[in-house]
Image 1 (cartoon, rainbow, N blue to C red):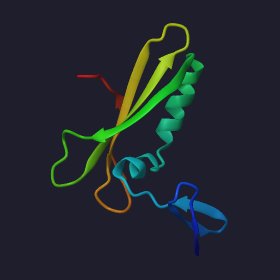
Image 2 (image 1 turned 180 degrees about the vertical axis):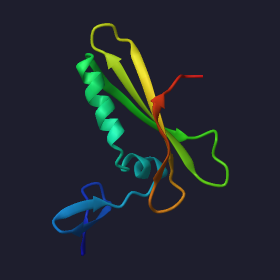
Image 3 (image 1 turned 90 degrees about the vertical axis):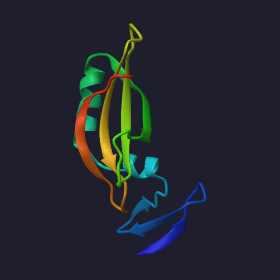
Length: 109
């Protein structure tokens, strides 16, 4: 395994021809997590004439001794500009983030 300098000044590990960025912030690490329901939801929303209009990561209010981040996906209807939001909660305390809650509707407070 070798290392190369990334375009934005970051480092990446190269293994078997693939480049894996080393993500340093919680917000970047949780977004790198692979969760198939996100891709399925995006395809479903696209079929309903919605597009992915935003992705936001913010510290969860339910964090305790662990660092938990809420990742919010916004989908906007192309005709009405109505926006629906869905979220997942990800624990980013350690090197490998993991899912805390499944994808579910999100409502602004």
